[in-house]
Length: 134
Image (cartoon, rainbow, N blue to C red; front, side, top):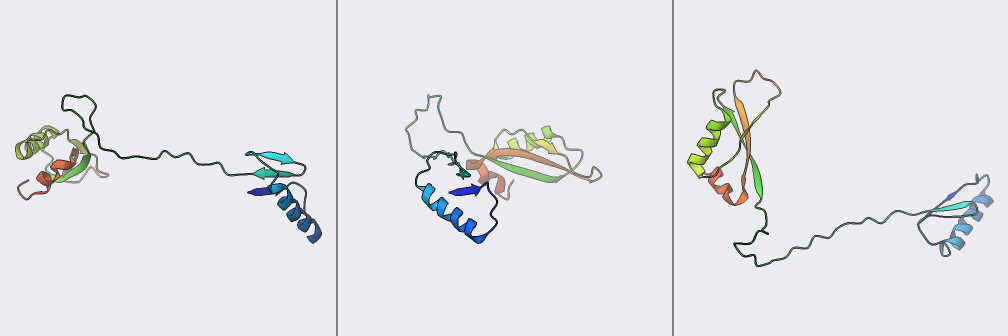
């Protein structure tokens, strides 16, 4: 709890009386902002945070309410400039049987001799993308 003195403190006795007034008024003041004489009570706002609760529910396979599958961003770089997004999509599908939507990443300098691509894949299938056969 903070109090702001609106009157200028010019001597040690004034400061001592201000401190004594704070102690007396601190118990009597309620609410977020109140003005009593020359003092204004200043109080921090309480933070409202939502508390996440994790649960387990049995969901039927035919139900429409399902948990989303986590997606992991993956990058492919040092790809020839002749390669298109469609070529990357076909290559990934051939190796993993997962459909992706790659997008070409713009580099800072266009004079590089290669392209880079970014796409997302399911976290549960990440082992397919990190294997040596990929």
